[in-house]
Image (cartoon, rainbow, N blue to C red):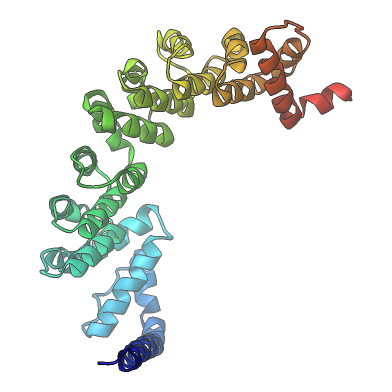
Length: 355
């Protein structure tokens, strides 16, 4: 077959593929518009039912028709995202009583992965504790999309069992940090004890990440476990634990200040930089000697973070000017003065001094 014929066939197939794609998009758009047109009158009709569910006025049973039942479910789920307290609890009870939760738990056993993932996502929006155990079982699903959807759902539902299962799935490598961290951040206060236990017992790959998540959560139950990570053999764990303590803020347990000061001499530059940030936020003006030394560190980011932390101390203006006026000829002192000047300008200290 000649190259000209081959080229013509290839061009024809490309054109057919493009046409097929356009037809698929057009059909999808038509279906979406048609569904929206059919839903609108049903939504208007069902609005009083959804309001009665939220306001507690003895809500009626869900409608029998497939479309109306689906629309009433979706409207209630949208309301769940907006309401809290007793209104949310009444809506969850109604979804359980009318069989919506049972329907989705049944779909969790579907042979189709997309259907299992959709069911997990919807159960998370329903926030029913009845779904916790089936969702935990889906953390072992063969498809990562289903596992991720189940993890996100458990984060919405909360509870200590869900927290332990999420943490275990992360440490086992079944779900990634982004999904696990986002889910754990959503959990209620009952996640505190299992999270603290996991930080204390996890391997190096997981400990630092879990400590960082606990810091973002503001979970002070984990402060002792996080502080233990300051002397971990892995420098990345030491860095993350220092930043987690900085996120938690004062007060700090006895002995933690000493560990942070020791971390300021860590052989890993990124650990020293984290120590500078944590000392500034947790120790305050008393950390000035360490910051002065770190500001002149040979590593750029260590000095940068130390100068930033020092300029933001309660007495940062005065301490910074004292360093600027120090005419010591050492290379470290020159670096410290240069870095401090940059941060004093950023923080407005130079302008205040001029005024």
